[in-house]
Length: 306
Ligand code: 0X9
Ligand code: ZN
Image (cartoon, rainbow, N blue to C red):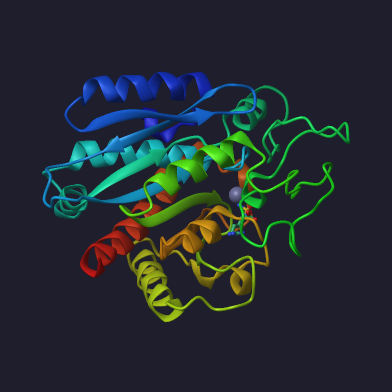
């Protein structure tokens, strides 16, 4: 199996980030957007092709918000490698990179990811210590300022869906929010990669309300799911988060949407529960190819629309 068909430790991923940037100085820049609670760097890879417009639009992709969802960072690595290898060879990738810069955050929760490799494979949250309790960790996908800590999140530090002390109390969430705030005019498409469940989701998750462009987003995920069904004979559910998965406030996708990034999605990759978070490495390529197909399908539409 190739490098991309295996899971990698955090140290390996940091090494990979550096090496990838060095090998492709023309297309890749590394940006430090902040650091984690335990002071690990949060690196974003900026991929760009040939400049086509004066002010270039951009896509944001984050992986590894939740520590145990190993297929998610694996997808970010897969996607970067695929984009670099197939630029100027595959039409879709070439068009994407010539039209949009792509910011990729391979591991948003490095402390949690590390912890799943050393201590507890099923850890979800980050590793911040709380003052009022001995329990560790905040759910970074409940820590954003979108109906923060209402129904679907918990204010108890021992819970898996603990929302934190206040919105963006966690350095990992704050770093992502700061970066997106300062790039909100160029970023047109926000994408957050999770597992598992095979779903293509869009806002809102923080309320049962429909977003103004609900119909448009629904068409995008419907088309993407149809392509996955045709090419890989696999079914993905799709729709607004609150109705398709559950009510869950404080998520990055809803927050990005409210910031003005009106193409905002969360993908839940393979599988549907047979292995769950423990997806064997032999499934990585299929899971990543499915997500890649959905990403390309949506991104190319967004390029036409914006
Ligand atoms: O609950 C979550 O954060 C995500 N599911 S997971 O099993 N990967 O934990 C779903 C996120 C959907 N979007 C929002 N809740 N905003
Ligand atoms: Zn998740």
